[in-house]
Image (cartoon, rainbow, N blue to C red; front, top):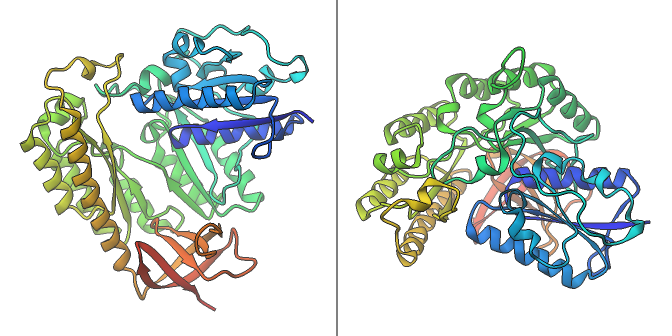
Length: 438
């Protein structure tokens, strides 16, 4: 039986797509290669969001070429889309496949018997912005207890630092009926939670024809249809997390009390230069309203540090805003100039040493907030979806709450992929430990 490996870099959307490719290959008769086993097909799903991600993508490709010298090497993903000529210069690659054909990889490689060959699919010059949402034959879960379901691709925002619209093209959505069908399929397979993900999740449905829809309408239909026990949103922009979604989450019981709302900067001038369509005051009001209606919700955010022109005062504005808000955790990223974006040409580039120190300071703030959030639940009861044993450390079973707290439990057989009531006992070494209630 022919075998394959998939190496995935980058975001949840890439992870979701890799799992779907893997499921389709398996359905076509391929098997997943065991660790250290020679593979006949090696796929690298690349990322281009930062220069570091692009470098790591090249490194992953070269590593596979060395470790699987007889394999067919297929490169796809955002780096393959934005820099196809650059990635093609690596000797040993057989196919560079753009986003428009990523979902067809199982058909493209359907006959592995001929072994490695020269590329017969020239890289596309850019994503086909007019295409409909390209979806895989079936929902895929991989080895997860909480599958990702990609319901949106592309982005029309064009923030000045972001390469994603150049890599993914215009926004396009999965039909609402297809989303419900995929959720029903996953529910029938025994799953209790699905993470809805997309490049610009809050823009879901705006492109649908003849009747545009919205993320709120989709969530309402999911709730009414009882298509899944728990729905988690991967990330949603501040101006798209509206009152309707907040109130539905507060009332439904099926939408996880976990919201990841990107901030990027707490300074209005930097936000303007980033082309972010909100102010610090708007973001502040949103987070306070969200916390008011869902006081136990986890609220995370992204912060982009070292954007051109970010002065000490601007950075202090960001730190001050984050410290005063009821945020739970931070994802902190250093600015990385991407040559296709306007920000790469902006004056006032911040020295890397300064950026690194600012990142360190913000991560320290984030760690304090996360531990404080965890501590606030000691003695409380929460519902936990058990994901499996963490054998490499304590051997405890690990699970996740609706409000995104990872909880470690004493090992008990038969708990995986079940929802259990747990008493939160303690926080030790940054980890939350609990006891399953009888």
